Length: 328
Ligand SMILES: *[C@@H]1O[C@H](CO)[C@@H](O)[C@H](O)[C@H]1NC(C)=O
View 1 (tube, rainbow, N blue to C red):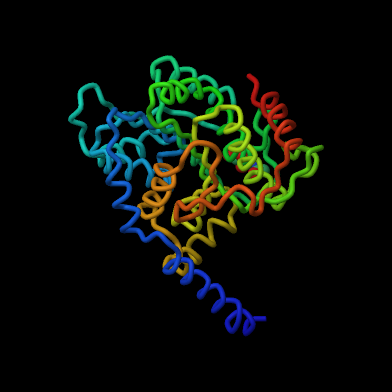
View 2 (cartoon, rainbow, N blue to C red):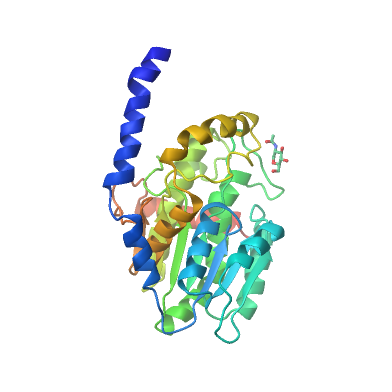
């Protein structure tokens, strides 16, 4: 068993990661140059839900850097102290009236999402970039909130959907003004599985495997559906690959917390840093055209058909189910 691991599995994994790391395009410097060339004629507004750590943090920092701080940036999350220390590293804006701010929200509860989105909507008439990256890693079973939604699915899908739905009028305003109007959900594009249309939300058939198949597929369907409903806007579902975030460390599963100490140092040559991932994902966001887009760890378009488990029927049923499940 052990010898099999060392003689076959590890070398294969090693070559695979090296291959992905060094042969796939574009390179980090290309991506950085592309991002640095972003120079809109307007002062952009970007909201990063989950921007207080991990990939969201990396994207927000890259965005702040490349706009030289001259963007209205909102970090939405649970950790004010983390947000404040991230914002402190942003270049100070020179454009008038531009702010960088933190808004507190626990996205597991739809009533929170609805309230926070409403507050944002009331004072921010136009949103150019809405990026959703909040994550949890758990191997525990279904864990319902008081609203009856599993916490992990709430963070990876339902809360994101509700945020997007509530803030879309502001994204549409940006589109009407001829500006960038883009929504991006970073989860696992192209890495979903088959879903059971009779059990959307996995109330009856929750398992770690089913949840891991469902959340990415729900996100795939979501971007396709939104793109059909809101022409002209961009809806991106991205797969970030392995990123050295604190998801394992923050897990409520003991085994995952332990594996963080053992695995992370071993995996570090094969995982992106938060900074590198932030650049690649920002690249995916900035270069996406209108319509639905799925992108990979480099920010490249992977198309809509490979490993896609949606259908017109799934789209219609998931929309209806989600509207009901996130109603407050
Ligand atoms: C359910 O989630 C809550 C909040 O994250 C956590 O405190 C609790 O330990 C979880 N329960 C189980 C059984 O995983």
